[in-house]
Image (cartoon, rainbow, N blue to C red; front, side):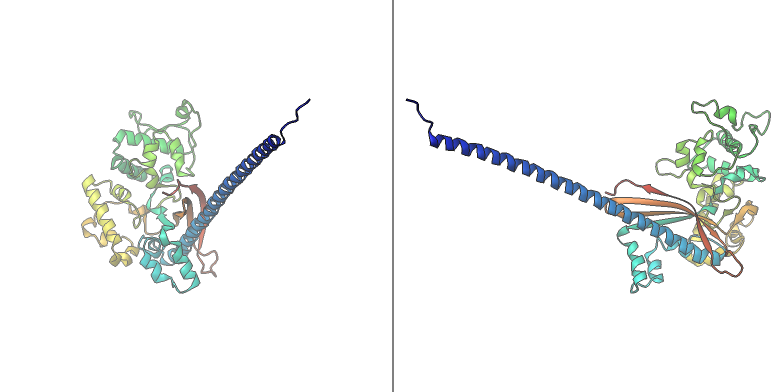
Length: 370
């Protein structure tokens, strides 16, 4: 007689199978939900980063536009340029901003809010205060050579005269139209560099024999190292003292200390330092701002330097080109917009509106804020 299976045992086995299937389904659903939530978090993070970046870019653009507006309003009417003017102080002095803007108006409150919590910072530099490097190919080569030589031999560069002259002559050869290596004397071992030097390098290229268009092009010139160009350990480099935007003049109202020292290259180092220190102290005093529009003010206001030999023919009180660095931070996202602006006089005699053109700009991504 055949024995039949136990129905109770069968039901238990069926229930175990069903339970296992339910557990598998629940586990699968949990994985799907977890993966979905993780994907949502990733999408949310990506959207937040994108939103922060777009806001930071717009904020940096606002800083650039404010700088252009300030230059339009003041530089053209003053006919002289110095860092005590509102276009410069506006971005570094909260009291100046509050004195110019009404926080009770929509526009005033919005502009003041741009600078709250250090979200936006803007630096403007007058390029005319720097040495115009392309002038080394001009008629007054000796004047600009002596200024650059004094810069290279002073702090922080401290180059030997022969090394500095080799560098200067190499820059001159890079700029001038001829293909002959510049040598001041047939008996002199100091000389520049033309195609024969650059074609012998591992990465071969030609000597430009034309004006430098962007300052970083100097890194292609014989003798210009990245350390010399950028500076090291927080010190200034050639990029901070030279310009390609101006062609001839140097604004003594905005020239940095190394350039001021170099303008007085005929003095010894200590006298040159004293001259630069005295000029900077005088022009930073608010009581002296009106004096900075007087030609030769540095001889009138500082009688101890009345007879100091300076290249007056290339000195000016005006500026037309300004570099702007606008840095914006939203959350952990920081972007920087760099631009060169050119101030121009009214287009027509009937117009009283000054114009500021953007000659060059680029957007720079900075490391995340901590």
